[in-house]
Length: 410
Image (cartoon, rainbow, N blue to C red; front, side, top):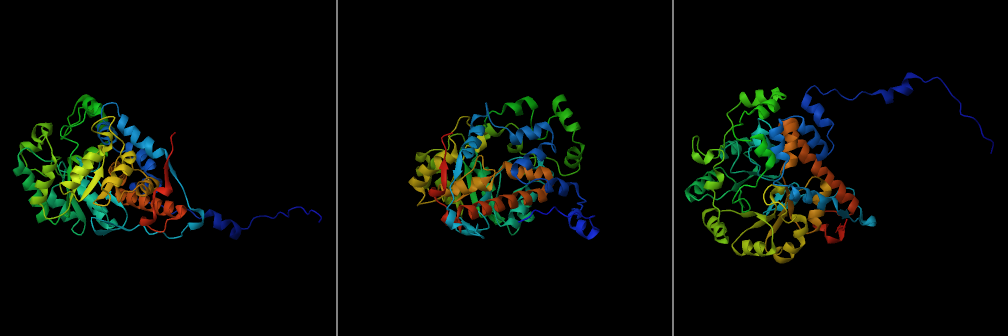
């Protein structure tokens, strides 16, 4: 066959037009920022530019030498996902059940304190985004929005309340009763924070609520006038689950006021005073998992607080199979600490978790775009999980098993 040279011609407009379609212009700056974020890593990079250094260090940082925080991610980075090549599915089902009720994905939004520091819309925006996505949201005892105001912002949401037990149990009962009156679905008892972990960056930054204007923090805030304007022109920052003026809402008092000798009987006490599920967060051993379930816990969260409490604590993902073997038939087991992608979620589900909890990822979205940024974060994670399941050959959540996951040694 004889070779014939390519015939060239002058391009016509109708031939060029399909290649010259401009992207729609996004008028809102937040829309443009979010359009460039295709992963939680992208959201993190964008978020860092949106808030003062002291706020960023509070959200991003870990305790002491940050070993636990880094090990959380190193463990997820060692995950190998193992597909079934002839079992791939086009439309996997990511819906599941959490505490016996339907959830759009195996994701729970974890409690995060001081959320309005990340964006002035704070907990209201996060709760509304979770409700729209069909996912549970957990309000922290140290929230900057009240229990009632969050319920008003997400009246159809699956709102949970995170409990720090106080030495004066009347304060905790007030929280429980308000949550019950506002239709909250579950309580989450945190057991790993009898004292607050040492976060060196926060100490250096003079981090506090309300922010303390040292020269260092003032310089950081001066570079973010929009953040400052939003904070100053909205309701004052305070610990809003406590009555205004209460010494329980004063910065730096938590270690003195919180219960520092939590026992399994405290789980039983909560069960006596709460007509609904009780979730226990901060479990880091098989023995503690068994004790929690024996005391009546309806679900457990394996968590080292994102590396923010005891440094060098166990990594939840590594602990997960042993805990599931011990109590998985009696309760729902979740993990947090280091979850940043749909692949991470698939790995946790494959190792036996009912679902995962996320904290920093949705705060990054909040920093970048407020409510819309949280929407984007949840959408990214759900889509990444759906794609991972498709490629793994898992048609639904129940199909993910240990055969799909291996932790590489290096």
